[in-house]
Length: 247
Image 1: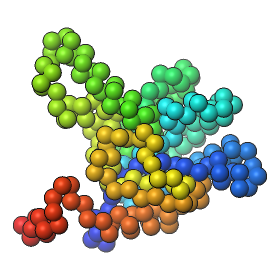
Image 2: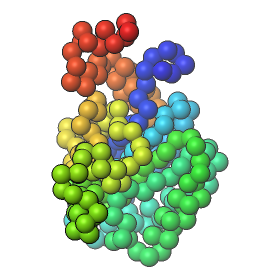
Image 3: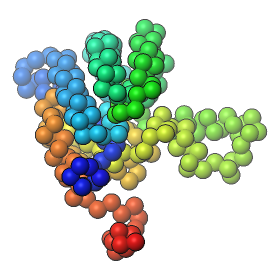
Image 4: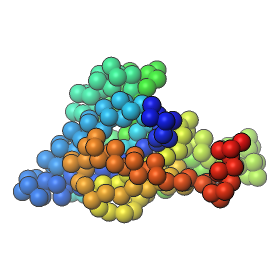
């Protein structure tokens, strides 16, 4: 419950779509859209801190984004490093914890070092957990978790019949975090694009035509208000939920 006595999402996941189209509408290079998108990230993170959201997961760079033009990918990597350097102290000051989820082994050694140092600086913070999905894919996330279990089976430390959903979940990059309550995608598209496939099983979806650079605190509040109107049954009936409330 929040201060108004209403249930608010404690874990919000967002696909930040529309940077390129935002720039195109303004006759600017795509990269300018990504720069504007960074400003939107700052505003949304700040708003989530103020609303005491526990976790915010942002899809920054998918495992499929390597297919984009080489120049754009290079500029995105450069921007990622700049943002890490500029924002990590602000996150730390706000008691926020940074976690990069994804296969970072494909990044340059210098960027990997930045990621390690940024996570180390904030690892003991107890406020918002900011998950940045970089070189991330839902298929990859599930696969790498299963591979860890397969290695245990091969070593004789685990029997195949002992593999449970809980063990798979514990091997995901989001282990230790609650699953998202609310998934938001900006930019008008209505698909999950290989993002948190396991974790989104019972998440409420919210799609908006607003392009990411234009998505602000008021836009997030609209998504949260929509969430509050949903009835989350998790397989139960409405009558059962009402009974639970009366218990």
